[in-house]
Image 1 (cartoon, rainbow, N blue to C red):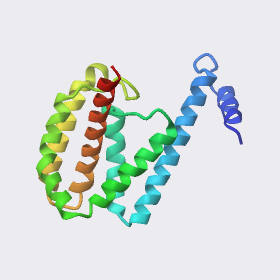
Image 2 (image 1 turned 90 degrees about the vertical axis):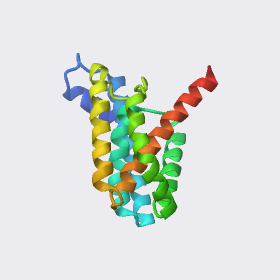
Image 3 (image 1 turned 180 degrees about the vertical axis):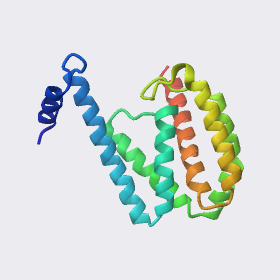
Amino acid sequence: MKIDNIIDYLYSQLNNDEFEKDILKYGLEVLIYNVFTLSILILLTILFKNYLFGLIFIPVFCCLRITIGGFHCKTVYACTLLMITIYSIISLLSRIPFYHEILYIIALPLAVLLLLIPQCEENTVKLSKHYIVYKYVLFVLFVVTYFSSYKTIYFIPIFSSLLVVMIMYLMRIISISINT
């Protein structure tokens, strides 16, 4: 079944005044892309036999990424390749004790950075006036998580996701400054 057939069906089922076909098509394409990328990450989790890491890292990363934002590739292919590369590297690093030690040191400063950075304007959930509350809630959650999960099996995937999102945020700032 082609995407256009699905769009036509959805359009006929919904209030035509509320939705445009182009918006429905874009939303469906994004959904398909995200399911594809998520499937690849789950496959990598299985291949690396790093189940708990994947189970925790992927949802924490997704929640942070859609609200904080960060670097975006110009094509979905580059984005998928970048995500596969990042996830593979972090998944492999998660097995190295030296990486754990570095993450234990930088985890709290990363949480503090959450308070200092503004939300990216593009491709993020718009929280408008609630963003400051959200940042404080995230900060408190990460600080509580830091002290409650320090040196447990949950710590590395949670703070690895924060690290990756912050790196992607910095990459966006660098790319903007280079292009201006």
